[in-house]
Each structure stands twice: as C-alpha cells, then as structure tokens.
Image 1 (cartoon, one colour):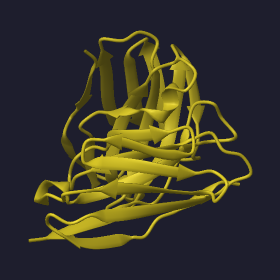
Image 2 (cartoon, chains in turn orange, yellow):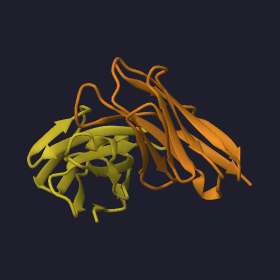
Image 3 (cartoon, rainbow over the protein chains, first blue to last red):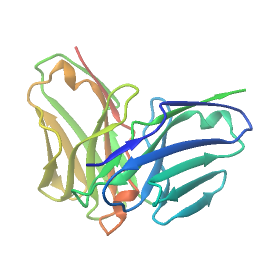
Image 4 (tube, rainbow over the protein chains, first blue to last red):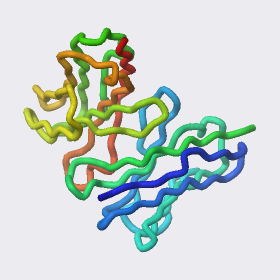
Length: 111
Length: 115
C-alpha cells in the first residue's frame, strides 16, 4: 500500500524560513508533488520532484530523497499570504491516473 | 491558456434530493478529469476520474455517480443525497500525456451542505 505522512500543523514567524516534511511508505516511487490550498479555496500546484535533490522556484523549494523515502517543501522569506495548507502527493502504484494525497499541513504564520 | 469552470459555488440541499454538479475545461483537449471531495480540515478524497469520453473509474463506493458526456465536461450526480455527502467538491484536470498526473489543476469548488 501507499501512505504519506505530514505534520498536521506548523507555526512560523513572518520573514522566517519553514520546512514542511512529507514521508511516504510505498514499495515503488515515481515522484513527489506539492500543492497549496488557502482556506476556502482550491488547491494549486506548486512543484514536482521526479529526481533526488532540491528544486527551487522563487521563495519556494522542494526536496526529495528517494533512498530515505522523504521530501520537504521549504518556504523562505515567509509572508502572511503563505498561510495555507500544504499537501504532498505521489502517483498511485495501482493506477496511472491518480495521485495519493497526504492529509495536509496547516501553516500558521505569526507577525 | 487553460481554464476550468465549476458550478455552483455553494449549494444547500435537503436529504433525499438529487444532485448535479458540472465542470468544464477550456483550452485543452482530451484531459484527464477528476472529482474529489474534501471534508473540513481534511485531505482530498478521489471520487471519480475519467481518461476519455464515457470512461469513468470510481474509487469509493457511494451513492454518487459521474459522467463525461463531452471531452471537456465532467458531471457529478446523485439521485438521493445523504447527510454524509456534505463537503467541498473539487473538479480537476491534468494533461493526458505520461507524467501529466503530477500536475493537476483545480476548479474553484462547490461547497455542498446537505440538511
């Protein structure tokens, strides 16, 4: 089976750096995606890691270590608008057409 | 550019009433289409997905059904709503080519309350 674990909540200060972790238990692996969802809104795609290492996109970076079954999303220079829930997701091993989603991490940013 | 429309934005329905939610995508052809449900403060539960017209795969046994009458139209239906059907319903699309599922694009969602 496949499952993803994320912390339910993370708190950080405006202007700081925060890391949101995602660990997965699966017998195979094809890559890790990250999505952002503001309260009341729809998820939006942030990044995808197919290979090990760090992928940077502006203030957001995503890291993957397939040997450790671990990834994280790194947010730098935090802004109040980054307050949201963040979900990691991996492709299902049982289907070519669906993602398996983590339960999400609520990021709370304090001024 | 691609756009995904979903309506209505909010809906309050009594138990036992029917449901029809519609989703359309513009600016792409033969997309993969998805219906998700999200309970408050929870993750995404995949309900249905479709890789082509008339092709529907169901992930969760329930009183809901889906149809794809046109390439870029996806409909979620129920004949009789249950209280447990309340939630935030999200339609999404992804490119059909290999690797496309990693990037899914979501509609604005429908917040359904069954009373």
